Image (cartoon, rainbow, N blue to C red; front, side):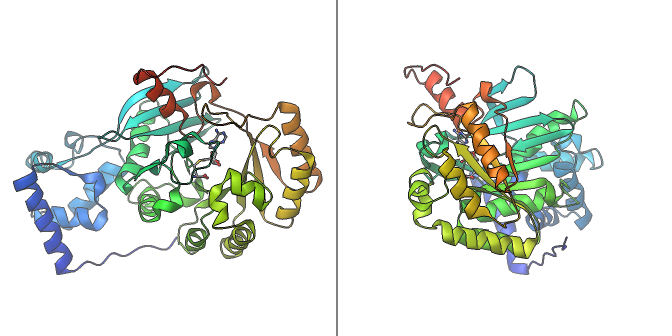
Length: 385
Ligand code: SAH
């Protein structure tokens, strides 16, 4: 992994100092340390008269030890902790609803972001793996009609701090049972590649050996297929895995199920994916949600096999988890397995993803939708399964 070296000028330092002073004197809001990247944190501590190694210590407290307050930072002097507490805070997200699956293996949390926006985070325990599925946007502009988040529309981008704080919250929780986050998937609410800068800043912090320290190979990002951003991603030094939400093997069907296909049709998308594989030598995952009578016939399986033939890839078949607001249903088990067998016979590596967490509304955006219904006086509908 290439190490990043940050340079910053006297102008940066002056600007950051002005920001801190302004906040302190006039707005009185505390600086959320999770909103600062490493150079900003270094500048803030320098402005407080602290040597450079303090920033490293505070950074490690935040990202390696998942500290939630300054009292935990025991290698800082008490006066410094008090000074920090007076002007800054560590804003971890606050949970508004937590659902745990019957077997305790899947935990889904709905977090409030401080205003009216809510996001979902899912923890999946599988063998020794502790995989966290995190959100990058409140809502989503991609408008996939089968997806609960797509149905709510775009609300706003999350900051890098809001993205990493989801991981820190869970890392802290898992520590109490001697567990660790082993994998992160950017597959929660939102389109990560439509919030590229913040998502990548979050990747840096999560990957940073002086910070959270999770290898980029343990992270996977899922996209509807934003072609320029896939190309940009293939040139990043961090080798984050790529998953593409395909859901259809031809343009007319994909135009309907993943509307951004009209802008980046399959030929363009597959070109970008091929180049990504050539540059990174990484296997790409294609997600394919099987919808009853829509994209699950033997003909669709054959078309998909033709589209993917010869690619270093893997197909994840997911029976659709139906949402209230959409006309699509999940394919029955026999059609799911027939689809898998046909792909396999054509030489395409494929697995059926077990519908874990289905009892806790673990489909994208579904817990939020359920929580809103139940707390708005709107008529309640029966759970989907
Ligand atoms: N915007 C990104 C990541 C978020 S969704 C993307 O589209 O890839 C993560 C995955 O869940 C995507 O493959 C998405 O298509 C899928 N998904 C969304 N709603 C679903 C549902 N109700 N049932 C099954 N899969 C769903």
